[in-house]
Length: 269
Ligand SMILES: NC(=O)C1=CN([C@@H]2O[C@H](COP(=O)(O)OP(=O)(O)OC[C@H]3O[C@@H](n4cnc5c(N)ncnc54)[C@H](OP(=O)(O)O)[C@@H]3O)[C@@H](O)[C@H]2O)C=CC1
Ligand SMILES: O=C(O)[C@@H]1CCC=N1
Image (tube, rainbow, N blue to C red):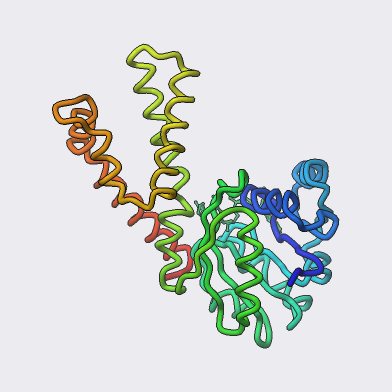
């Protein structure tokens, strides 16, 4: 179940993360077409990944059987309606637009457009993405399966219900930015304690990487894993107490809540 040609409408950050994974996998680069208005970005994608590029959205929509919609959600009304004449029953539309519902996407096209809505994240660029997706009303089970397979080229994929998509956006879509902030702050704190910048950043990033793998690979609850680091009367519980006093948990609840709300707003809800 491989598409003939995959097209991207918009060749920015997230599109690049996805097409890097696709071309590193089994999908031939010459069967990927990217429509992108910025000439420098077109040339960069062509050179780095060997994909075909164009400044003509319609040409890409006409030639591809899977069309990955990767422009900003604010451009929905400008970019999608002109594609309607090229999108037919042969086209699977895979949207990564934050907040935009499958119903809103379907309304941009005639007939029974086959839409799958996905929310990937940028670590897809290194093959460790986390994505969720849901099917629109006209997408077939095969459409959902194909979308899953495509996103699995760049990491893990969960199928969720559409009402969960804004929360996914607030958690794993936006989540890398929260984690980068955490890593930066952890490294800065190490520098304050006298470590070199280079050592502090490497230790902070590897600590987050290792701890995340422990959660994924042991299947143990994070609280159990944390208990094993905290010796009674030791260093770690003193640090954990500071995190509790500083409101780290409350800040994360707030971050996911606000990003989820913003996703709903972008979708017009
Ligand atoms: N970044 C992320 O972490 C994630 C983003 N997303 C979603 O992915 C989508 C893209 O986001 P992101 O990659 O970050 O944004 P970018 O701005 O990096 O990418 C969007 C690209 O679309 C191009 N573009 C602008 N106008 C048009 C047009 N008329 N036709 C075709 N292409 C056009 C832009 O070109 P130019 O720069 O010249 O304007 C840009 O290269 C958004 O909908 C976002 O919600 C989803 C998950 C995670
Ligand atoms: O910030 C944004 O709107 C996009 C969606 C999820 C991550 N980045």
